Length: 127
Image (tube, rainbow, N blue to C red; front, side, top):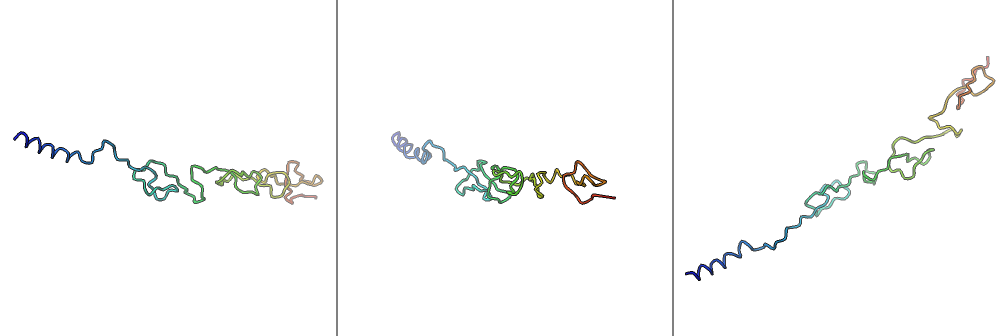
C-alpha cells in the first residue's frame, strides 16, 4: 500500500508543475497607439514611448523647433521646423524692418516734415 501511495504521488506531482520553468513571461513593450509615428503592432504593454505629429508636417512634436520658417524674412531660421509668427520683413528694402517703420513726411522742405519718419507716406504739405 505504501508503495502504491508513493507511485500515485510521483505520478500526480509533476502535473501541477508542468510548464513551470522559473522564468516569467516577457510581455512585449512599446507604443500601442496606432495613431503614433512609432506604433508597434507587436507591443502589448504601452511603455509611454509614443511619438505624435499632431500638425502632420513630418516632424514628431517633441522634435519641433519654433521659429521663422519663411526664407524671404529678415530673421529666417534655417533650423526651425514650426512657424511661430516671429518673421520680420523689410519689403521696401530701406534697411528698416516693416514693424519698425515710422510713416510720415520725409521731405525737409515740407511744412509737416517729420524727422523721425522712416517711410514716406505721401502726406507732405507745402502750403
